[in-house]
Length: 208
Image (cartoon, rainbow, N blue to C red; front, side, top):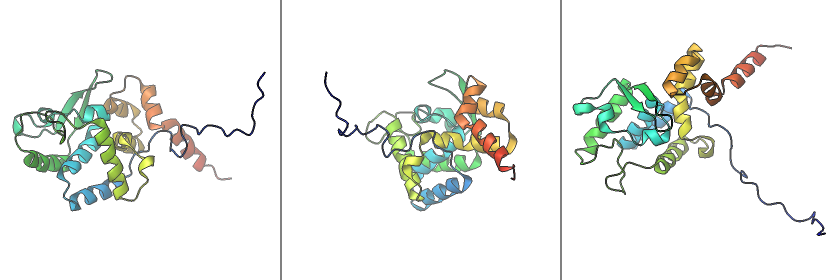
């Protein structure tokens, strides 16, 4: 029988030096800071993508597949749009705020007329939209621009941002469920980490 070598170093765990767990939403000050950095840098496409991600609250796979006709049929930007989710097949409505419409108007003017209908077309793959990997890399850059840790945030931070603020202001978990397109209310509770947040809030009120 082979004897165990207790001095043999253990293999490096898969999550070494990684930040694991759900990515937190951005705070309003982070959203403002990223917008300002993108505006100052003249990054018209990135600003439109960032603002659209905040409003749409879509998974990355759905966001990158947005079409011009989803938000601006006939060339006129809508105030609301609806997208069918790839994961669940459920329709998800979202608002297009004035801030986002302004960013999209500037981007559509820069984008110009194209044969494809992708809202955010790929620059390296003609006829295709940007990939989810490219979107994730862009989010990392945006986060780094305001001196936050890129490993601590991700594309789901953008998806969570608006609904997290909505829940904090109203406590309306059903509205959050509809906006995220979740089938079950429990999924929304887990996704937003609401039970943990509520428990910590109650704990903070106990003065010993």
